[in-house]
Image (tube, rainbow, N blue to C red):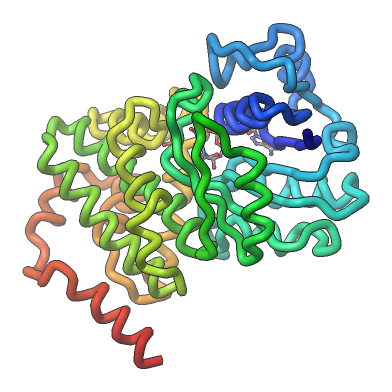
Length: 346
Ligand SMILES: NC(=O)C1=CN([C@@H]2O[C@H](COP(=O)(O)OP(=O)(O)OC[C@H]3O[C@@H](n4cnc5c(N)ncnc54)[C@H](OP(=O)(O)O)[C@@H]3O)[C@@H](O)[C@H]2O)C=CC1
Ligand SMILES: O=C(CO)COP(=O)(O)O
């Protein structure tokens, strides 16, 4: 049994805490809100984020970060991307020894284009951990909390650290693989949220399965182009954290990104949609970041560009679909082939 702190008491932090408790670990679930931590301990439920789910007795909620991380061997960060830097700065003040550091957050920071592990590396004192581990894959909290079969990948530049995280989480309901391709795993998890917004819009507009399959596969093509140019292994995008997560997020009723896109497709305004959601919709900020990143890398990302125009320039979704359908004729794999050829010749 290990003492593990899960920082972020939203739907995903709570579901991951449940897996750890099922595996007999002593789990400290940290909420930055005092009344939220107290309510979790009192009711043994996280009513706001996972309503109706009974929490195992191995989970204790904390509001005081110092108490939450006291004597833990591992810290799992599961706050939204925009909160990562702030929580790391708070951790510097309260951690007093080296721990295994993992995160389950899916995003890219606008402006800096940093992946979550890069943000952590910039903020957290390097004496406190070795290499960050990312835990990612097709995994909605609602199903994990019902102990339905799910798969994840733990990736790190230090595979021993990834294996520690694999050991902590793996059980009969949750199969955890490892991967050395941190860049590919983090980018796949972050970028699929953009395509899921697009899939929701497509459904909201009343388009059918053909359109969604096209979005998923052409979305995967542009994710692979950007990811490969950033140094990822292109094969990673064919795995759980690439096409796997893309499928689940574009097709599941649980997806926050799909739901937000669906409301946009039905004509709702972005601000109203985000207010209505009440949970983080990472794809919105990631669209901004990926749009900037693609421009700086000179990578063609037409779906991401279309999403950017819908979200930030008030473009009409139907017009964006028309523009995507009438682009210049292409060979299906030409851009990715060119990027791979460049990498081989470098
Ligand atoms: N939900 C899922 O199924 C999955 C989510 N993820 C990823 O996990 C990450 C978290 O998502 P999820 O749990 O769904 O999000 P939720 O919206 O369900 O919860 C977010 C949690 O983070 C808290 N929070 C927000 N800002 C801060 C802050 N500055 N400091 C501390 N805590 C903060 C929120 O508190 P408050 O109540 O105050 O807002 C809330 O408890 C995202 O990157 C998401 O993409 C990955 C896989 C699956
Ligand atoms: O990453 C997820 C599933 O793997 C969760 O996606 P949503 O944030 O769209 O719900």
